Image (cartoon, rainbow, N blue to C red; front, side, top):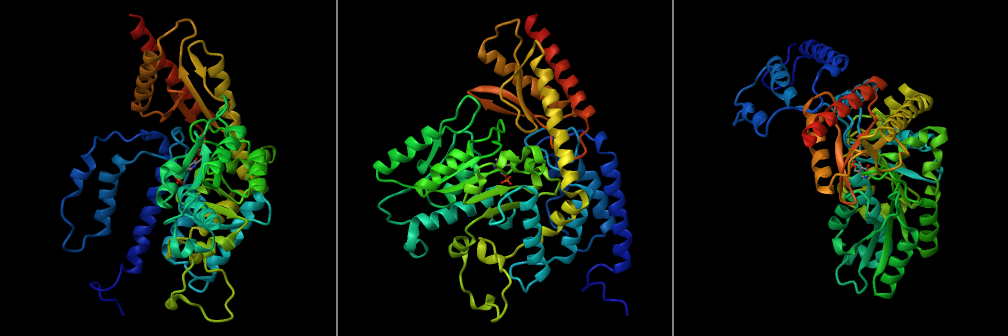
Length: 488
Ligand SMILES: *Cc1c(COP(=O)(O)O)cnc(C)c1O
């Protein structure tokens, strides 16, 4: 019997027809992605204006919705799946990952408790153990998936706060403490550390930004000094956040030394390896995670450099018990019956409902295998080194940081002319503007010691060397044009 159309969802045969259309569209999109401008060219408000001010009163056909998706939404997309996307840290929706995400949407599981989908919980436990092994991390680490590294770091620091705060933390919170809690991270750390301090009620004044050395790595003696000064000054050191692959230059903090210091001082060590951690799937890059055996928690983002569609971030910790102590409440409608021993992941974080994110990671890890992932990441790092060599040997460019992974920081700075700093900044800002407006590639920038610096990060699965080559050609061409302008 045919379902009443006004109360039920789409007819299965209609879904099949539209689903085929959608997969065809996606296949074409991925096949022809090179032809799109990387950075969307719309002006602010342009998309919004086409969307209409009022919600539909009556049903609309999916054919029409799909047509509008193509006509209105696609022009406003910046193509993160584009092989010439070199801004921030590139990400990839791989074919396997897209299918994993599709099935996850179809199942629409809420994995809050073990029993609300045993496979969701057990697959999460399994893929996180696999990933841990692929990265060469200690088997004592327990893992959990959150949406983003910012959330992983927030949860890790909440656990650190729980330990530092002691027995009254759950009841009194951080009110009326006589010794304010303090957090330490480097000047080059990601802003998510400060956001966590905001959300945890620590206050930004209690985040101590430790100076870095000339390669942008946290200074260990500066860290020791800051901690000692705070102890003497009536503060309580709560946690140190070290970074493996900082956001601007991908520098690697000396985690073995920092870890030894934290262990001796009884301070929680959280390692932010959101981007750089993935490199450890490459055997000769395992060393980047050296010292992580001393960490209390580590974050790695498969949605960054492991070809899994956004969002999926993994937090590993030696101390899941304290994470649970921080976040679990006993609501009677959520209590499970005796004898059920499965993990209830909702007890280990802020959110109750949990997407089935492990599924896409399972698809990706199996589709590529450790070796397949390693081969691809190795290429990205090789290409970054080749780009670095070209920059180093070019008379008009200068490189500003080492390249331990696949990100290169550089700027236009002709060796034959001594241009004033303000003009150099201005030139580089104009340079990136014209490069990105070309639509051929997309770079982002950062500031290092006040200088405006271009950043080219390689990490998209579909990137080939010719995309880097072309980007480098575009950069040189636009630079020549700008220099002629300045000279005349
Ligand atoms: C990308 C990144 C983050 C933030 O990641 P989200 O998942 O977007 O929250 C934090 N730290 C480092 C080092 C990063 O590279």
